[in-house]
Length: 135
Image (tube, rainbow, N blue to C red):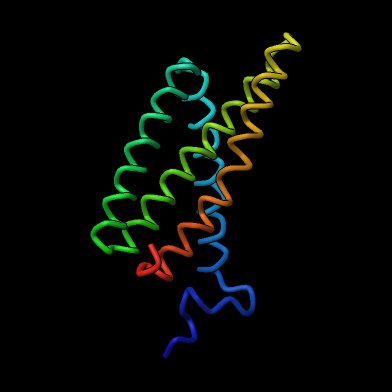
């Protein structure tokens, strides 16, 4: 019954190849679109807006913890991590395109601090989700 299912990945199935092709094209288009958006927006404005969004999702996380909603807390933490990773991508792009060593150094230091904060935040959110009573 499920022999021709798209989930059946054994063997070269036409529908599996089609899905992989569609995924590849979608990924490339997303990267291209992201690049165009990054070129069109002011980096400082983007980072400030991202920071504000991360602060808002932090409030949502705190509310989810208070209301004993572990899944909401995890979802909000994931959003914070996504924003953080986008800021990291933007910072890397800015550092790569700058010819001012002091600016590159400051951007790289800030990016490293952000990069080192994301995994512990996600791990702590997982622990809170697994043991919400401990909070």
